Image 1 (cartoon, rainbow, N blue to C red):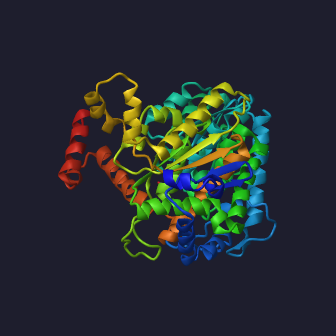
Image 2: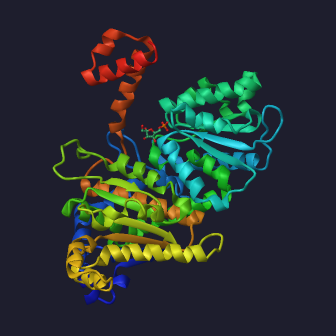
Image 3: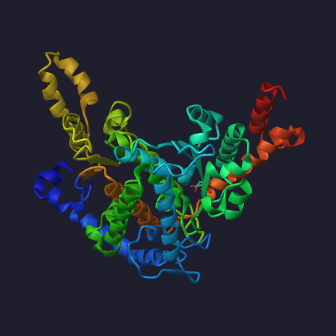
Length: 526
Ligand code: F6P
């Protein structure tokens, strides 16, 4: 890469794309014009253009579940009817959006009253996976846009400490729970929802008053009613919205409550603009397509196993966790969309952390480790607060890290530097191999004006579409997640066995699982 930069003074302008407030710099990659041309040919050979059309028009591209994939419809600004199974889904979306907008206003203005007539001060989102990570990540990312009047909390883990720690600070008479679960059968969520219900009932006593303290978002309306949630407090989503793509739907209600409906609409707008970009830009100028192709370049041509997403703004601290689900649950597949075994690698291991804390932890491996880890760096030019001193220091770290990764430091450069230190020749030669940075390590930089709702919506959508494009090129179904089912099934069986202490069934597992179960049971005195 060093020589490519030396040869081409326009490399940055030739390999960066500005879209609205986001500058995407992909010049620090092991690519030439020729690489991009060939990768774009690959995308075309995989019929990416018609795949994009198929997704937006509601074809059932999630073939193992016979479902359309229409999270893009949730943020669309178009009025053209979109008919799925004889229903214009745009009308359904508008109805549901209007409902959550209205309820958000009501709660935020203190008009929704708890069972004793006091307004709601605390909202607790109970959900997991897509019903947790999106709302939580957005709420954290947009902290400066949150009004203090309502505190929003998130509970996901089945470990009782999660809900206990949250409830310990709260007053049941001024707390509202939103149970977010597409299926309303997820074990973790149902355990936490039941604990919350019991906690409210300890104070509120009268079951009919639960309506003041519970809302739900689900496709399973019967189960929400069985749980005791008043029908008017249940917001619908649809099976054409995947859990990890559901932040744009009523699943985003906690985020909407935190930042307000107007800001939530900006989030939708930012995502919609990226949808339009994906649909209309030539692939060479199309940010999610280029992101996807670069990912494929390292994954399938350099055999890189992982990627790191490194946001520098503090408020993006949940972004890597959010993307971990989005990417790994979507593209962690080993068979083609039609079920044939693959003989090439698909989705990478995605990990990440805030940039500066990461620099003092695992960046050593990024700079000098034996593995190639392509990285994405995200940074905002302005801090919403207007602060500049920390911000300049933060940005200088962003630029320094990607430059260091790209340029590295040759043995000769290390030697010259050590020569200033007064060390002996022998000492210098001993140190040189340790001080060498081979460089040539790729990075993409996303530099955006500020972390506002519209920009955040765009960033999320860029990654969603990157994942989609890669799925098309790998010929996999990015929209199912059968791989999470086996563990869920076994956990149910094992829970029953532990509760009933059925030794015959316990003995029927492999010796490790049996041994662990027995150890646990003897420890708890069973
Ligand atoms: O177990 C994985 C998963 O199904 C995710 O795909 C989903 O986001 C999460 O569980 C939560 O599911 P639900 O919203 O149905 O509770």
